[in-house]
Length: 241
Length: 287
Image 1 (cartoon, one colour):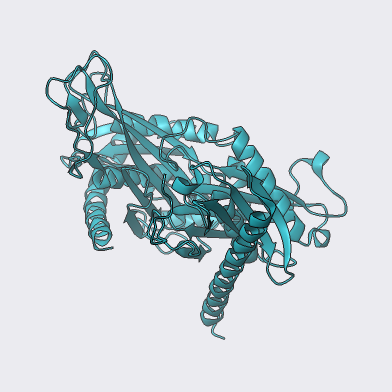
Image 2 (cartoon, rainbow over the protein chains, first blue to last red):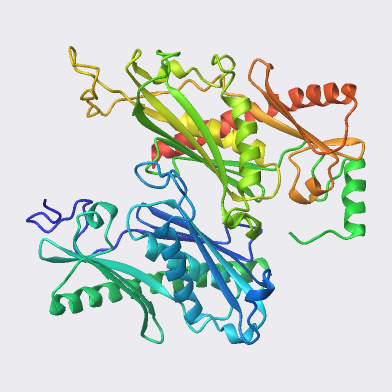
């Protein structure tokens, strides 16, 4: 199967090093402390943050830091074929865990002991890269909620098909069975917080692909900076500053 | 949700009694309604409806299937609603089951009609491909993204918009194909047909607070209700479904009065929705 044609164009018309179109909105769920919608091409994800608030389950309370919880759900209609079990299936549980660990590493939890921060991520439309879109949406939602963080966390995926490293895989390219590398970084601190890969890659090509995904993360970080800056200007304007 | 103090409760009840609600509306005014169609690219039809801070998404997906032997000329329609955890931590895990079931059943009652198919929102024979052998199964899914009261009305509006947005692919079954196994259905023609949604009813929920009824309650106002009646009414001002919620008993004359008020309000809501849906569809065509 040809994923990159001889002229170097992918199935959806992009070049190999081109990301999909990014779009983000902050503050969409009015009742949440922080919320955001993040779109990467056709993948659309909404994240809502509730907290810091009192811990609901006393036995889980931590006396020196905040408890971070995360739930990832995909509704029936988000994928091409209608899914049976939207919550609690193994993939959702795994992704919830991944998002929680990634965000927990960057939230300054020691500033909010004995409290709980809930991150709920809902996939509205899935077209590859849902994990990355969820992390990006969660970062924006946490920023909207005003929760102190070390740095933003941004994420992007990359793969390797037809001997070409490809940035930001769509579902079609992801389901080809080639390697899929997801990277999450803290852009200012220049540190990697998440690295996942499936299938197999020779080591030198692996380094290239991870480098490509990291570049993608930095591009997402620039976009997120702009969105947050714009949002702050709007807030200043509304307050008459 | 943070609890209300005695002063706040008094303020809400008093405001409603004086026809001036907390956000400045009159008792029978809806919040501004915002409709956007085609929000889920993978679905055959979808819509997002916002009423104030309440936001819901509805999607319609079509799958090829065999029709019910008792109704060979019609497709099957099923409807489910779920509440996303983004609407509130109380919907996390299995917390949303009770509310989701309540909303699903109320909507099924209003929109899917009786066992014989009488009174359904739209005619499922438009989903039939080959009589008795092949039809489209329509799965209507509702998702509550943000909850600030009046979920049933918003879901009803979103489903109406999603059905209007739905494009049913034209399936060509080659003549003479054997229809006992799965036939080769040709879906390559890009033609689509639309579903006639002129008969889809709107749902108007009247919430009784004290001695007065309000339309489009926010969740704070709903917390003060004694009971609520949701009426589903179509263009011809006929009632397609009725649900009463809340523990307080209602005098039959009050219920009849609520139904007539709902009927009166539904006309405005129907016109407003139709124009918003048409505008949303036109916007979608342009992009």
